[in-house]
Image (cartoon, rainbow, N blue to C red; front, side, top):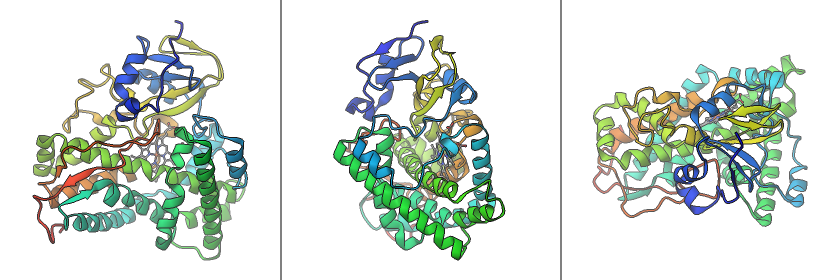
Amino acid sequence: MSCPVSETFDPFSPDYLTDPHPVLRATRGDGRVFFSSTLQRYVVTRFSDVEQILMNPSDFSSAITVKPLCPLSADAQAVLAKAFPRLPTLSNADGERHSEMRKHVQAVLSLRRLRTLRGVVEQRAAEMIEQMLTKPTADWYAELAFPLPAITAFELLGFPTEDTNRIKEWVTNRQIMTWGSPTAEQQLEIAGNILAFSDYIEGVIEQRKASPRDDAISELLEIHRTEPESLSLVDIANIVFLLSAGAHETTTALLVHAVRRLLERPQQWQDICADPSLIPNAVEEALRYDASQFAWSRITTKPVTVGGVDLPAGAELLIVLGEANRDDEEFSEADTFDVRRERARRHLSFGKGIHFCLGAPLARMQGEVVLRLLTAAAPEVALLPGQSFPYEPNAATRSPKELWLDLSACRREGAVA
Ligand code: HEM
C-alpha cells in the first residue's frame, strides 16, 4: 500500500498540543500510518503496529531516539560539542551495547533503592500537600508535580539537595531541544544549560570517586572499579544524564494528568477516595489515557512493512505511544477514562520489549503514594473552574504547565497524617 503523505501535519500547533488525538485521526488515513513531509518521518499510530515495532529491535533500531525532531543550528551544536562525548546508552543504544548498559542500570535501580526512595517520596509529598492545604487555591504543577519527581530523581542519583534549584534551572526546557521547535536563540540558551549540567555531572562523579555515598552514582562507580572495560566513566556520565532527564519530567506529567483527569470526573475521584484499593489501577489508566512520553522514535534497519505500508531501510519513524493507547481495536471505549478499566496496564506508555522503561516501578510508586496522600488529606479538593491547561511546544513529552486546585472546602491544618 502506498503511504498517505501529509504536508500540513504540525505537532507544534496549538490544537495538537492541547489535544493531539483529533488531529492525528483527521490525518492518519485507514492504514493509520502516514508520512509527514514537515518532519520527514513516518507517523505510526495503531496499537498493534507500535507494539510490533517495539518488539522487533533488529528491524527497528533505537539509534535516533534522542535525535532532535527539528535540526539544531551549527552554533548550538558547537556548544554541545564541548560537553563530555555522547555515546549510545540505553534508550538510544542497540544490541550488545544496550544489554551491557541496561544490566548495570538495572542493578542500581534495585528493590532496596526503591524502598528507600518510597520513604523520601512519602515524606516530601506529605509536606507539600500540607503546605498546599494552608491555602484556598494552589498550583499542583508548581507545588508538587514538578518538584517531587525532581527531588526523587536527584536523591536516587545522589545530587546534593542544596543543588536542586541550580539543576532544575539547567534541565528545564532540555526536552524542547529534542522534541520541540526552539528558535536559534533558545537553542543556544538550552545548549549552554546542557553544557553546564554536563560539567556538573562530571564534577559529582569525581566527588563520588573520592568519597562514595549510598547513591546510584557511587554504585555505578563501584561497578566501574571492578569491571572498567564494561562500564567506563564516560558511560556513567551518559547514564546519569539520561536518568536525570527520563526520571523527572515524565513522572511530573503522570502526576499532573492523573489529578486532572480524576478531578474532571468527580464521581471517579470520590470512588478512589472511598476505596483506595482502586488507586494502582487509576495510575495505570492515567498512564494509558495521557502518555507522558506521547511519541518516541525508531529507524528501520531494512525494508519492512508497517500497517500495510512498505518502508525503506533507514526510514525514520515517529511511533505515537499515546495514540496507540487510545486505539479502539485494543481498548474498548478507548477515549473513556475509567479507573476500573480491565487490563489498563497493557498500555504502551513505558514502551515494551527490551527497552521497557527501567524506571516504571519508581514512576508507579510515586503516582500511587501521591494519590493515596491526596485522597486521604483532601477528598473535597476540586479543579478551579475556568482554567485552561497550558502545554509547552513539545511534540512528545506532554504535560500541562499549571493545574489549579480549589482547596477551599478542605481542612486547613494537620490534614496530612
Ligand atoms: C511516568 C513516568 C515514565 C514514563 C512514561 C517513561 C517512559 C519511558 C519510555 C517510553 C521509554 C522508552 C522505551 C523504548 O524505547 O521502547 C523509557 C525508557 C527508559 N526509562 Fe522511563 N519513563 C518514566 C519514568 C522513568 C523513571 C522514573 C526512570 C528512572 C528512574 C526511567 C528510566 C528509563 C530508562 C533507563 C529507560 C531506557 C531503557 C532501555 O532503553 O533499556 N523512566 N521510559
